[in-house]
Image (cartoon, rainbow, N blue to C red; front, side):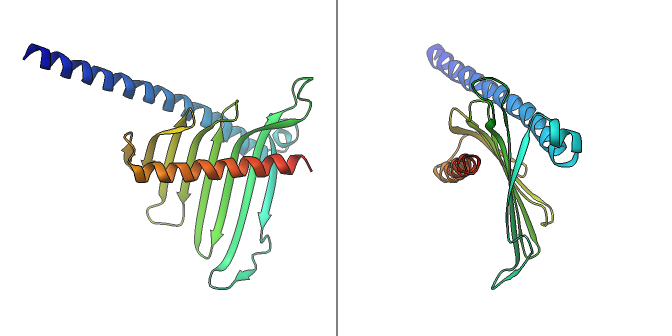
Length: 189
């Protein structure tokens, strides 16, 4: 009996340790996200930061004149790439992608997706918002080591991801990789 209680206690302690480590990772990701998001906001809105700040922004706009699309209505999409670099002799030009913001308008719906990348180019966070919904839809996926470690959908927090969760998180990670490739091609033109 004592052996079973000891095994259960050991299991619970290991689960608590893993959860505490995940919470630390998520706190670090959130702090980094807030820092990068503020720099990106300033890059877009403040003339001095846009010209001399740490981040550089490139924008890809689809249907910039809001032309009507059949069976959709008004459709528009803007992808903003925020990147930095150019601070060493080896890397004279900015080329380190840190944040991608994809804003889409489909008729009355407004969608916003963000991919946050670490200093090493690894995906750390994906966010998805539908601002035109009541209440607004908000979802997040946290990544560490190339794998999703937590999803948040509204108020529902999931640390133990199901096969369906993993499929969804892998699709979002693949989208992030495609956007990184698009960014790399765009700055090499």
